[in-house]
Image 1 (cartoon, protein in one colour):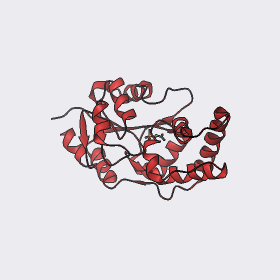
Image 2 (cartoon, helix red, strand yellow):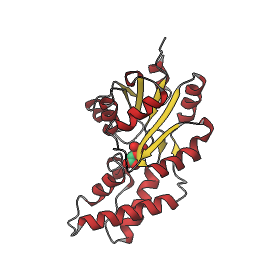
Image 3 (cartoon, helix red, strand yellow):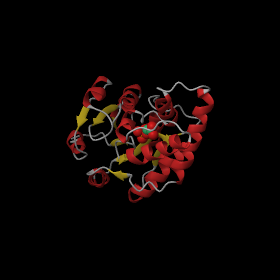
Length: 220
Ligand SMILES: O=C(O)COP(=O)(O)O
């Protein structure tokens, strides 16, 4: 029987499908500033590294002066609009509630670690997952290095009093698989999110799953 009973989930692209709301908010900002916008699917490759990487990605093909100032303006406006919006399109992926129900029944300790700003992470988790009463929910905080730096993942392991080697880290991008590797956790790459199997395997995924409930098979 498996004695490993702790799981850390990434948020965007793993627990929740947030792509459209992120894309709509960023496109609103870009339009406001008379900059080119992007198709929703392009954002699959822009998201994962936090807001600053998202902004770098939307700016990378533009030959604009004073990028730093522009970057700051876009980041601020994006955070403002994203915080205000009701995120009506953001939903857990099909099968996520069933998975969490099972994990709670099996007495798993569950944490969430996102590169989404901390306040937005809390807001989403509180609105969509409050019934699970999760104790370790962490977004990007100014004083903690973001993923793939392992610091926050290791802090969660310490709070749960579980050795890192026994923790499953579930995510949908290379950033998550690198975080798992850097924290010496077991990386599980999911294929319903923003990236493909090759990226997840190339970045150290120990397991790959196609549906949330497949995770239960790994835990057996
Ligand atoms: O908002 C982001 O860039 C990433 O968020 P995630 O870490 O939950 O995937």
